[in-house]
Length: 431
Image (cartoon, rainbow, N blue to C red; front, side, top):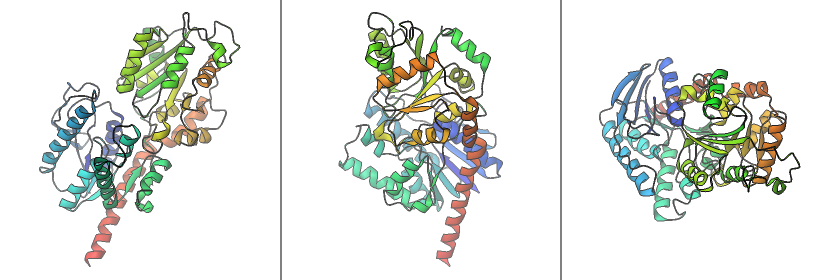
C-alpha cells in the first residue's frame, strides 16, 4: 500500500508531532508499505535552521517544503506561516505519485481539509490523526470568536473533511466525544494515545546527575514542567506556588497555605520550566521582572538528552486547561510513566489526567489538583520535599501500555484496515 503522510514536522525536528509521525512512518515501512512524507524544512524551535529538501531515511521518502518564518509573536504572523506552508504543500502534492491513503496531522491547523481535497482528487482514502482539534482550540484560546464568519467556515471545512475520512484517530475519549458531537459517525473514530518515546527517552542516572550539577541543583528539590508552554497548559498556579515558596522578604509565606513545617522547608525548592512557546517566554519575563531566584527557564533539550533532563526532577507538573479538555492532549505524561517519574496533574477533575490517576492508583505518587489551586500545589510540593512518595515500578508498569512498540503497530493497523475497508466499500458500490 502507498501511504502519504502530511505534517509540518518530521525527523529530525524536536516537535512532538514530528517525533510521533516518524515512529508511525517507520512502523508502516517495516510492515512493507511504501511511505512518503511531506513536511516543513524549518526546525520547530530554531526556524533559521533548514533541513535538506529531500532524503530517504529508514525507507521513508521525505520531501521538505519551504514556508515563511515570521514566528509566533502575533496571530497574523502565525497565519502567514501556516498559509505559506499550505501553499507549498499544494505544489508538492502535484509532484507526488498517487497514494492509496493520505494521513494528515494537525500542523498547520485543519490540515485534514487540504488532505481531503487532495484525496478526493486522486481517489485516495483519508485518515486524519487529530493531535488537536481546531478551530475549537482557537475559540477556547480566545484567538477566534465563536459564531464569526471565519469560525463557521473553518468548522464546516473541518467537519466536511472528517465526514469524508475512512477513519479518524483521536487521542483520548474526551476528544472522541468532541468529534462525535460534530455529527461524525462514531464507528470510524478510534482512540489511540500518543506513545512514549521509550527508544530515545531512557533512564540516564549519570546524565541526570550531570544535569543537576550543571544547573546548580545538587541540593535542591526540583519541580519541573517540560514541553510546550502554550495557552492550553495554564501554569499560573505553578508560578504562584513558586512565589509562595520563594526566598527573600516575600518568600516565607507558608501561612498562606496552612503549612506548619519548619521555616527552612522550601528554601531549596527550584522550579524548572524547560521547553518553549509563548507561555515559556512569559514565564521568563515574570522571572526576570520579579527576580524569582527559585525559577529557572531552559530551552528544549535534544531528544537524546530528554531522559537525563526529566530524570533530574523530583516532581513533574503536567497541565491541562479546563477549556481545552478534548481539544489537546497531555502527551508529555507518557515519557514520565515510561521513566517511572512521579507527576502532579493540574486540571479539572474530569479529564484524561484524571483517567490516568485512576489507572495508576492512589499510591503511585501521582495526583490531580485543581487548575487554580496554587496553595494546594505549594503544600503538596512541601510534603513531597519532606517525604517523597514514589512508586516507580507501578508507573513503569502502566507506562508499558503506552509504549511505541504497543501503540504504533495498533495505529498502523487501523490506518491500513480502514483504507482496505473503504476500498472494498467503493468496489461494492461500483458493482
